[in-house]
Image 1 (cartoon, rainbow, N blue to C red):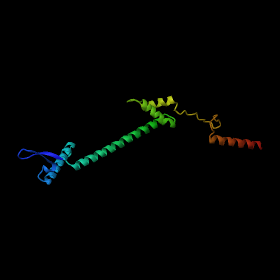
Image 2: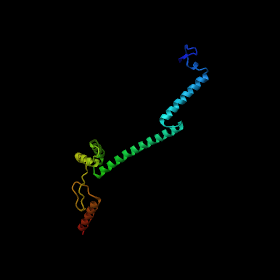
Image 3: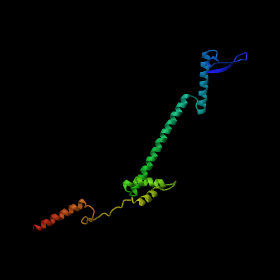
Image 4: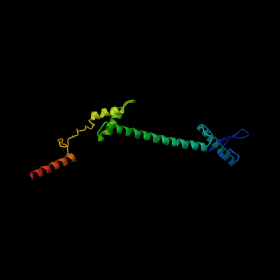
Length: 168
């Protein structure tokens, strides 16, 4: 790289950059000085007094960013678990809980109650489990429902009793 140099007599001469200095050592010293000055300006702009302090602050910032990411991840997981729990409390069919959550979140605006929106969507989809009436009398079986073990045992005992009476 060539630069212009003005001699003592006022004449302008083009010379190699390192030849502006009397020696190469002076040139190298000037480069180091300029680098050092630039580094100090950058450190001042960052608000630190030295490289080690900058490294410490950058390490702390990295840790803060890492923890912030972890907190956001946990908040997302908590929200999903909470909405899934709402789905179970509302007796939404397990295979439709995620779909209902997605639909409710799509309709939600700031301040909306997601649980109420989930219930509304579940009703719209017909996703709420309808519990069948449970028979309390084991002698009466509901047509179309499988018999309980208790009902089967009772019927077996009645059949054995009838067979015994016939053999008398």
